[in-house]
Length: 79
Image 1 (cartoon, rainbow, N blue to C red):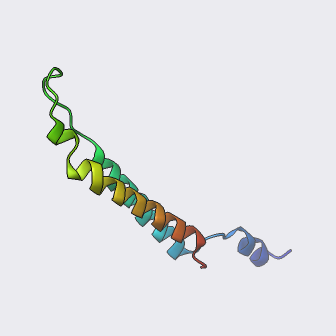
Image 2: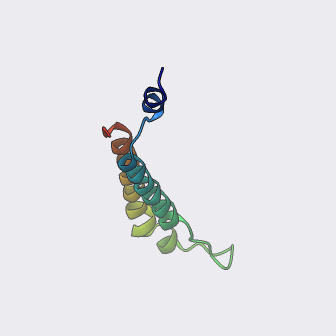
Image 3: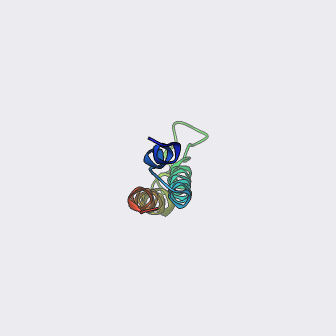
């Protein structure tokens, strides 16, 4: 088996696949960061508006799911 044939069999993904994978991972990380927080200065006080805000309940999960969709696209995209 020649060196070129051996390298070709080990290259599962191309450069564009890895780029899309990085974009998907960045979206997942951004979604996790959007979901974080909500800590109160006083542990005896519960602020429902901060914990159940649009950012944490709606926006962050949508961004995370978009990141997973981009990851699936990156894996199945032919290089």
